[in-house]
Image (cartoon, rainbow, N blue to C red; front, side):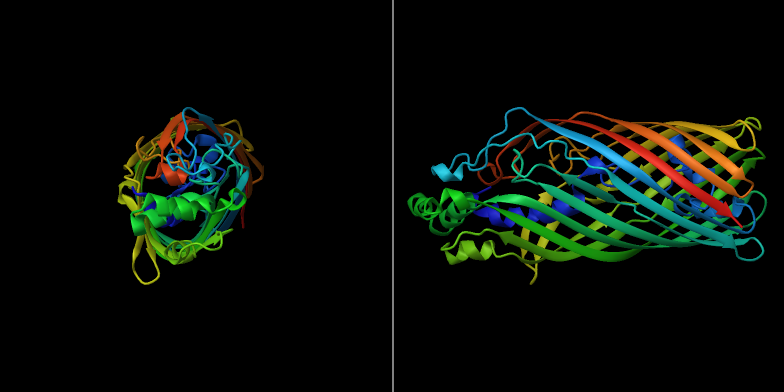
Length: 464
């Protein structure tokens, strides 16, 4: 890519990062969040579409409401997620490499520290009887999310510093018990998304590339860019955007025998049109108009379709003490081939390739009931990553992960449950060799990530 593409791609990477950065803190694959309850965390969410333990089945399979005891039930809880994401350099190059101006080559910087930070993911559900064979409910949680932040002077600061996504999913649902063997469920999903990111900008490289493209003269470009004092050679770019959209989910439960249940569930894709602003800070004065215009910020938008999922799950009770769970879940990440950034007015500012792949998640788990008050849980699961090695970026250094979970449930009374669960995710080390299409503007980020995740979940449930 020519140097002149730096401004356009800078905005593209920023908006794309705000949407897809940080699989590191999303704990299904890529930037999805599996943590929609704490009761399922203890079994690594194995068999979640067949478990129907409590009102949180609204998210995983709304047909499961038909299996809940009569009356009303609410569930409230939080999962505390703490990722560790540490980059190790192996051949990175500084921004400005190849430009014959001393101030263009910015200090390489450090490894960024731990980009992960503790984040709470709350959830709330309510279910109630709705007449003969009917139940109604509503759930609220966060299906996608992240918060990652590197130190502001790190090696990859020109490709990303801070990335944040916050989503809310409100999911009114209904279930119908057709007979003793079949239950059906359906829900609507109203989702909101807020995204923010920051990154550093090399203004000397941007000015050199812009003038070189406009004039074809390296001497002219060097004169303009070289006039920018080293003290103001770097600035920052902040991008914020938001949107809301609708989706749906449905499912079915089948009693294969008195002790065995099959759950089938589908959650639709959700299409967003993120709109927001790109704001540059510290832009040097005196730049040519064409260069300054590219660094003036403005309104931007991007269309993105979040993936759909399909789950096939089993719950089996070999005796009164044990419940064994298992599932296979498919996620349609391949819908995300690229993120095309559009400025107000319709012109394309840049395209960030993603080339995601569809993924599978497989999980197994078990629950052991000691008595009427105490149960213990354990689970094992594996998530594939949709990210390929070529297109991996510091905003999405995702790799496959293995879940190992334990948990306990305490029933202080007939109508009250308390769950506490813990999971450790062993995330494969991921390699990166990324220039964002422009070594001069962004530098080259080459190295490896060491990643892991710890999750602690607590939940309170009450029937009345």
